[in-house]
Amino acid sequence: MTCRSDDCRRNMKNYFRFGALSLALGIVAAASSQSVNLFQASFDIDGVLTSNTEHGLAQLDYSGTSSIQYFNLTVGSDWVIKDMPILSQDGPAVSHRLYLPFDLGLTRGTAASPMNAGFSLTATPQFAGPGTTGLANIGAFLYSFDTGSKGFPIGPIGAAAAAASGAAAAAAGTATHKDFPNQESSKNGCAPTAVSNSLKWLKAQNSLGIPDGQISLGALETALEKDDDGVFIFGDHGIVALKQKYMESIGSGITTTTSVDWPTILQAMKDGKDVELECQGHTVAVTGVTDLGGGKYGVDIAHDTKQGEAGGTIVERVTFDTGTGKFENGTWITGHGLNYAVIESVPEPTSMAAMALGLAALASRRRRKA
Image (cartoon, rainbow, N blue to C red):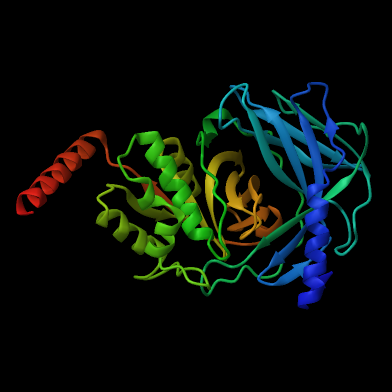
C-alpha cells in the first residue's frame, strides 16, 4: 500500500513506530550468544509511505569470532538467506548486530503473520537451509529518510530479490573497519553524516590532530553546503570537491578519490582507507566488504534509517552485482546503481611528519606577526 496524504502518513508512522518498539518473538540458537528477530519493512521515503512490503529484515545478534561465520535462514519452506558470510568487525567475543534482507514471499501491502522459521550461524558453509524450529512473529520496521543528493531521487521501492549465496567467500576477500561511528542524521543529511563518520574513524585510527569540532556534523553540513534538499554530488559544488577543499583548508592531510571498481574499493578498505557510497539519492558509510565470488560483493553499510528521529542507526548488509552494475538485494537499495564510492586516506607517515612541521612553522610565523 502506498500512502500520500499527511493524515494517512501520520497514522501509519505511529503504527510502525509502535511495531518497531514491540520486539518480534526471536528465534534463539542453542548458543545463547546467537539470536534473530524478523521484521517486515515499510518505507517513508520523500513523503511517500509504502507499507507492508515483501522486504524482510533479519536482525542478527551474535558474538564475534576470529574468522568468517556463515548465516542461513529458512522462513516457511524457503531458504531465504544462503550461507551469507558474517564478519566480526569489532573483534572476537564482542557483541555485534547486523540486519540482513530477505524476501518474505508476500504480496506487497499484505501484513505479515507469524511464520515458521529457523536459522544457523556456523564456521563453515552449510549448502542447505536449516530446519524450522517454531513460529516467529514478524515485527514492523520503518525506514524513514529523504533524498540527500540533489537531482537523484531515491525513487520507488524495487521488488525484493532472491538471496545470493556466499559459500564461495574466503577470508582473503574481506575487509572491516573496527569501532566505526554511526551518528544520527538530520533530514536529507546522509552525506554530511557519512563523511563525518568516516573522518571521525580516520582520526581515531591514525591519531590525527584534527579538532573534533572541525569534523562534526554541523561543520560538515556547512562545508558541503547542505540545505533542505541535501547536497550536490557532482561538479565544483559537489561533495567530493567541497570536502577536499575543506580538508585542505583545515590542514588535515586527508585526500579524496573516487572509484566504481569493487576490487579497488575492497583493497582500499584493506589498506585502512575509508569508503562512503554515493548511491541513488542516499549516501552511506561502509564498515565491511566481502567478495562473494562471481562478481558479487556483500557490503555492510552504516546509516540512519530514521532521519530526524532518535534510534534509527543500523548496520545492514546489501549485495552489489558487478555484472548488472546494480544492488540486487538490500530493501530500499534493491535495483539501484552506484554513482561512485568516495575513498578517503591519510598521508604516509613521512608525509604526515612533514605536514606537522609545516603546520608548526606556519603557526610560529603567525605568532611572530601577532
